[in-house]
Image 1 (cartoon, one colour):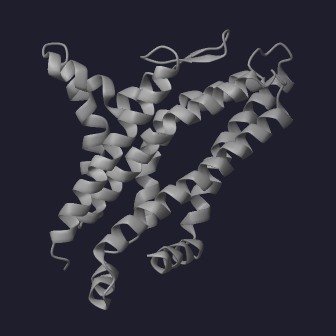
Image 2 (spheres, helix red, strand yellow):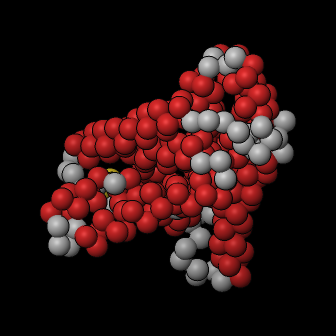
Image 3 (cartoon, helix red, strand yellow):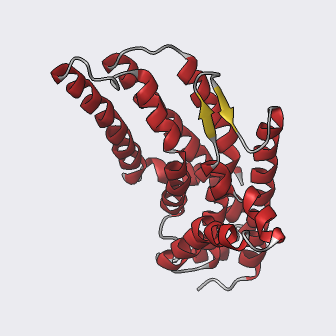
Length: 259
């Protein structure tokens, strides 16, 4: 399995979109800081040219980061079905478990590396170009990352699940969006009438990541559960659902005929 993971990383290193994805996301965030600095230069009393406002934009972007995990998983998976490389790997004798779990591991590692680089460049540009509002916002950002991490892993696991069991990339992405985004919305509406869906909607990752609030004065997150219970519950619900869809995907893929 280690050799297969190494081969996946080698393939990823040689893939141009590995770098373009990071570059595009970084440039978008840096450009926002450049715009804030330019407006501040033109209008001296502009109140938002500071690191607090810039980082608060990053806080609000976590639902977008959640959905970007679909792009990351799809990019790392590559065109395995259309190029028939997966069929060749299985015919060569590589166990399906090695293929399935190696892909997921590489997706998670790449996602973490990409996030650190993109966030690092955004934070650096903010402190270089804008007024320094102190380090409290950095601490708040770190706490947001901590509670969101298992939810981002869940999004990767769900995408990996559907990409393996649905041969068409478009169909796999649509199924992923349906589960990650559409199903929570439906649960929210049904929760107005049915207690089961009301309880279910509270623990769905899309709702969890959108229910992260911020108390900037107290410099702490506002979660559906008070105190450290909020952090624990985010990790518990995120990891349980991640493992559930990881196992479902693997069990289906293990018996699926590869064309």
